[in-house]
Length: 88
Ligand SMILES: [Zn+2]
Ligand SMILES: [Zn+2]
Ligand SMILES: [Zn+2]
Image 1 (spheres, rainbow, N blue to C red):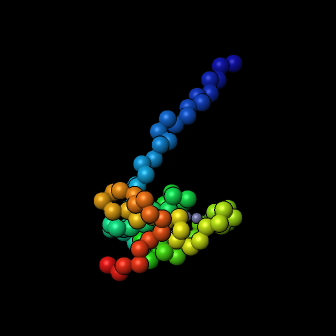
Image 2: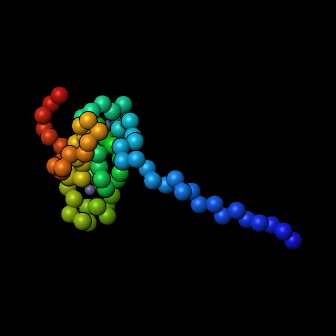
């Protein structure tokens, strides 16, 4: 009996950091600057990002709404946690 089972693992599991082009919450198209949640690895528009709350496990780690979200400008992730309040 010959039944070779191909156990192929996908080598291409590395996702680029900022691949999302729509808000993960309201699904509107994103334009920079927008927010990136490192906890969820998802992109959010600024209004959603400010109120974004992570998983319960994140809450257990002491997170607050918007705390995990960082601003993305020019494809670069800000070093500052949280989103600025400046209206566009
Ligand atoms: Zn949104
Ligand atoms: Zn999150
Ligand atoms: Zn969080």
